[in-house]
Length: 212
Image 1 (cartoon, rainbow, N blue to C red):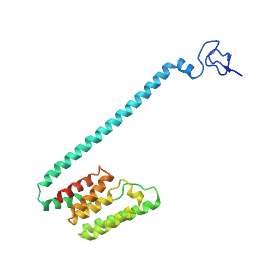
Image 2: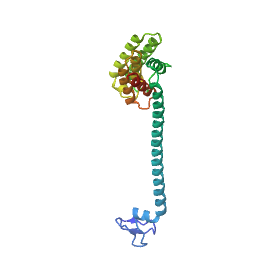
Image 3: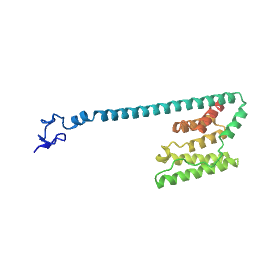
Image 4: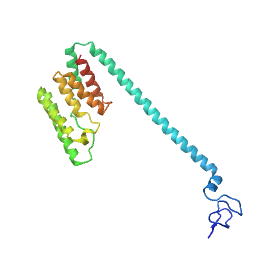
């Protein structure tokens, strides 16, 4: 059984690629020949879309680089000022600058009930540590923070998030205890999770200067 040519409406062989009566191409080649202008326009639109996406990606990368340079410049300027300050003043400035200004919570919304419960326990420990710091009990605060770090290590899901809440809290407790090297390790741990965390950047800078 044959097929009908859509151009002259005559019966032709079903395997034919060209109509023997009107000479028109059949199938995809015929479609391209008769709709070449539309195909060309479609290809142009696709190319423009790809070029637009490439430009937006390039622009976003350039902005990220500029933002990083601005942050780096500001930190270097601040560090230069800090280097000229007496050590006692730097330590005081670090404690004041890094001291938690609000109740600290995880920003990540965890998908399962178990992780949410673990996150809640960690947040409660951080809150108790902050309250102990406010009361002038740095040793007690550090115990709360270290327990929070232990719970975080035991939870792979929480540990794999970009959350910096726990290492920053532990780092600050080491600043309070006058152990800048250990503080720096914690702030650098936070920066490995989220390089754009401003508080962790400040903590690492203070720790480096206090460790001289």
